[in-house]
Length: 280
Length: 229
Image (cartoon, rainbow over all chains, first blue to last red; front, side, top):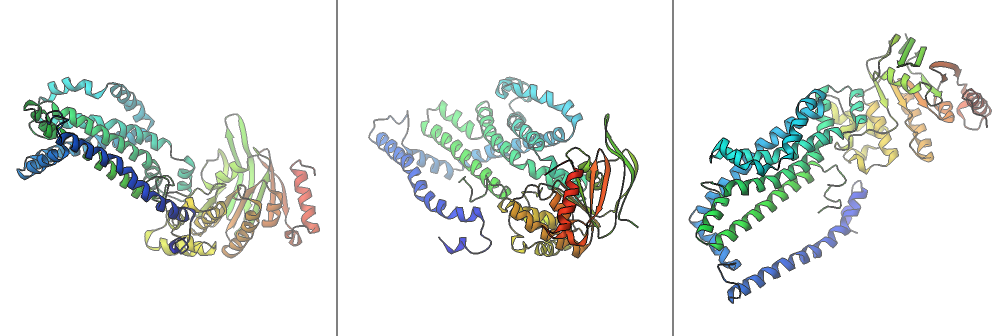
């Protein structure tokens, strides 16, 4: 046992953390072995010509392409366009979803006014309205923002409503006894209580945002990494296509890491999310 | 001037009358326990005094500063212990006041702990600190020890007796536990069908568990509640 677990007001969570951390390290290392091996095999097969470069280029040549495109400034430019679209779309979608979710969660009248409409629109696979979006917005930027926003709105809305509904009414009653104002009850009790659910909605929204972006960018975008891939297809630049796929994967991973870090920080009180809890 | 004065208060839920022209007065520093079978209206009375439920008739005067300790601790899991204690206090003095209240319940070294790490008894002591930090004129206890194990409950009785004799709020304890009522209260009321059925001053000697006055009062109260041993 380390001395840190004994010092201070030792809690069950703290004492439990030490052994699990020790065990997690080798497993984490092991979990990387297989992907690295696969990558090496791929490199080997490509170099020896077993896989033709126009089918699947070697990882090293994808890396060279990435370096080259970064030097010319092309890759950063497209990446920036894509990130901007995702951010703006997510900001609009999540904002609207959160506001509507809070209104529906708090007010029966708003629920009656909004909820059914949202449920109806939600039933449409949002990619099915792509042709309509193109008619409405043309091939301009706003149509792409709209698609991303639409993809992110529903998970945030649904989980916000759900989270607010699940807040323990006994805690709200306690807030009243303690003399909190209505606004204070919302701030101190209802929103924090709904937060785990809202953050889950955010994670689902991030996944949807990238999905929407891929579709939006492959259809008539003048820039962005989706455009890069479409463009590369015309010229059979498989290395660029693979690079774009890798980029999407990396972006997805990064946003998920950010979302999880946010969960760990904001939900430190929650036994399921605490750094010493079951999750990594 | 009584701290709590209820005159002919009535509360109905549809056809059912839960409080029936009930009269009650509690003086400052007085500890009153309220016994009764389930559904006799004792929790309704407590909630009316807390301002959580309205009354349909009669007059009810309660002090502005009043707090409730519920059967569940009702701590906000997303706030550390000290912030839970200081809930609703002005920011500037919150930490210091919470700290001294936690000291009184013997939990000053848990101020920065998360509520989930506390045991049931500790959480209930924090709830007690949260009630006291407001310096209530009326302290309402709604079966606060019912969910605790027997040993913790005995310790809590001692703590509550200490704290209330030091701060001297008017106290109303709602409980099912006849022993608890006799050990803690100055006056024990039994309630039946929405009315106060009987009032018993607790004689000085009855505070000792196992003494003759204790056994006598206990027997009387159980009889009034319709229980024979």
